[in-house]
Image (tube, rainbow, N blue to C red):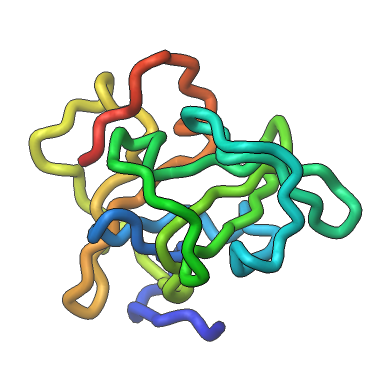
Length: 156
């Protein structure tokens, strides 16, 4: 994957993915690997947020259904679903998403506050990234996965 670039000296790279009809981005430096959902060996049944666990490269990894995490209707496993395996500050985990797109480079000038969302109610949001007419909801994946609430997080 080649980054879609925005001309600027201090650009950050984000992996873009689709979830429930919206485009999201997370810091690319956290990504360990990308896998098609069907390629993972699953060992447990579905839970509310934890979709199961999988084995990837000899490591047991929890898989979080991001639709359920954002309070969206969870869908049955489909061959088009992708898993983003991440190295978080505290663990390795997988995110089940509708589709992975590409790597996008954004400068700080390309990232704006998310309208109508306060920093305290959604501190896991980095902002709204805009590049080449595309909008990405940028998430701080460490903060998002650290939320311990029984309620799903609010979608921007």
